[in-house]
Length: 206
Image 1 (cartoon, rainbow, N blue to C red):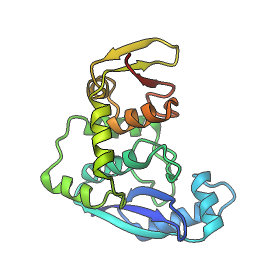
Image 2: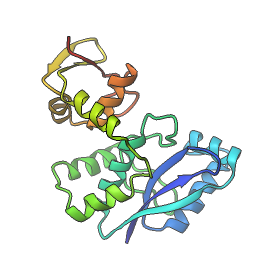
Image 3: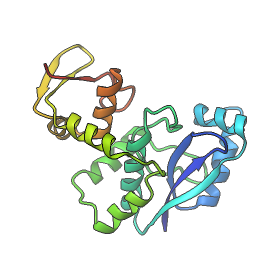
């Protein structure tokens, strides 16, 4: 059995989204790393040391690793780049082994590629909807997002070259990145900080 989970800290809005096949062992691994001398995730470690042990909440259970990773990616897309997010990697990857090994970039890329084009089942979509880290989106915000995503945009690569797209959906499909990342960059005017599209930025076409 595979699980998606979130870590939340009392009195704060911080959240970390992850996946594992052993929640108890994964929590212990997180704690050992965060309280150790060389934490794997300094951002998570800082909040952990300041606010104490978090609460681990199971958000979904899955029969296959692919389903688990697909859902984890959905969860990360909702929060990555936001001040509340404690995840360092925007790409969901296979959980570390009990020995604490990290996946190589090649393994993460392979895992991501293996899920490209997969269709979510109605059951998976329902789980995602229910477990989306408890964030509520107003009707007004949904309308703003829909309007923004249908607007012609310009994608700017790290060298300053510009590429025009009729909508963010077209851009998302062409560049193989999520709409939520494009929307966030359009709102804050910054560049993508990591991942395969690091250094790219977007603006509305004039």
